[in-house]
Length: 102
Length: 102
DNA sequence: CCGGATCCTAATGGATACTG
DNA sequence: CAGTATCCATTAGGATCCGG
Image 1 (tube, each protein chain N blue to C red):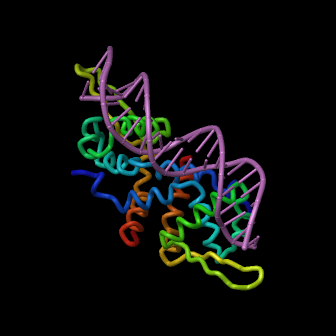
Image 2: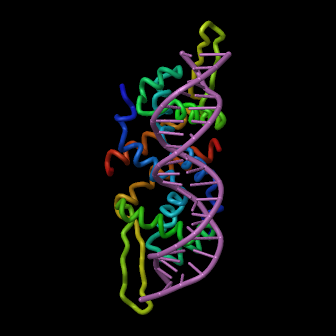
Image 3: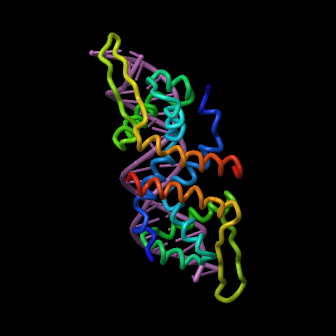
């Protein structure tokens, strides 16, 4: 049995979730669509670069949808896709474990 | 609302699980106590150093218990603690999500 | 058998300043 | 408002050799 080749999907998912800020960002988006500045307000310890980097990752992983509203000034909203919303169970189970043991 | 200070336990847990090999190691140990060489066999892509580093982390985090049997040659076994075994739900929920979406 | 020690590279995290 | 760009420090990951 070779676990390193057995569970690539698991590994990929875990590495995604384990990156710093990712879980917090997903949690914020669980509250509905948000703008860049909204997220900065709710996670003030995170730098602009980190937020930008993570949003790009989340978008390219299909967890988040980015919509540009061509107003003036331009408005951009981020919202979870179904794939992203489906993470809720995972996040709750990590949360429960963390509360119990950390 | 400041999420970055709200969820330190969640963050810590997620970063632990997100590190490479950690999930696989815990999965292997779910099958019962294992020796160093057993784990290398089941996760052959992982280097000795990675296994050593992860086992130390897991031990100092209280997920794994290390027992030395003073035989000749010395035998060392690693097994999950209750804290470690309690991760099963978390791992399964990541697994389910990964299978569905990745 | 079970690592430890060393060395190296790549990836990540972050501070700061700037822009359409 | 919603990012870029730059630079720097730290960490993670890994190859290889060594030792009780």
